View 1: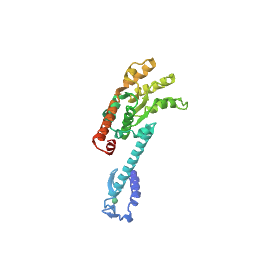
View 2 (view 1 turned 90 degrees about the vertical axis):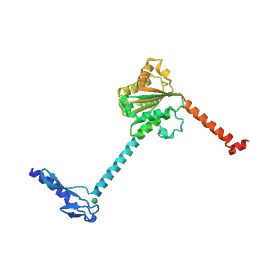
View 3 (view 1 turned 60 degrees about the horizontal axis):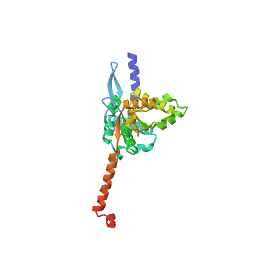
View 4 (view 1 turned 60 degrees about the vertical axis):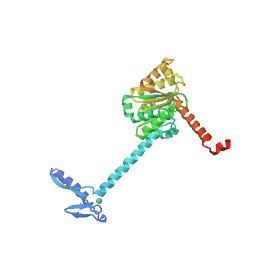
Length: 289
Ligand SMILES: [Zn+2]
């Protein structure tokens, strides 16, 4: 025990030796060194292995400095994590700007999207995904991207891609396919944009099934956007399609985009403009008269 004490004692002696910083006006009081700036102690007495030992400690200003440095480091790490999440999320960087904030008020199922983000941890637990279905230009991709961006803001990892990119990657013989799928499954949420079966080769169907099935087995949520109707998804014409569609339907809840809201709002906007022209008496209107 004596030897241990000696070792500790010597270690702290060395540390204590350099503690007194005359430039800062450090001083000694009651056997302890005090910081000349904040006037708090730079040492304390601790009982180590039964012996009272003088141990260096942070004075208040040093402690503040350490805390600030730690805070800065955490902030830097947070920014880097956030940057990493954004960089890896999209194949198409334009999607980074499709956020709930940018919605002009015409986005269908906005509330549902916000709720999905809000309750994502539960969605994850229950493995609940979404099938955003409807015709072109109804805002499905926008909603999916807005969900992705909002989750990234909460530091949740998302991958939004599509099967033409995936299949293109898969055709690269240097890519290890299992590893590739494994990587996709590392993301908390996978979004497959513009899902369809137009690439109807057995190579494609096999890989599409593998990716969706492995997502299912990993018990992780999936969102797809698709022009295929729910009727098409529930009444697959071939066995291969049936395998894929039924997996998707098991994992995700259909959300139908009608495009009605968007059109309605556009029509209302037009009506407003017309009213302004007719009744507002602005210059265009005067000219028309
Ligand atoms: Zn100090």
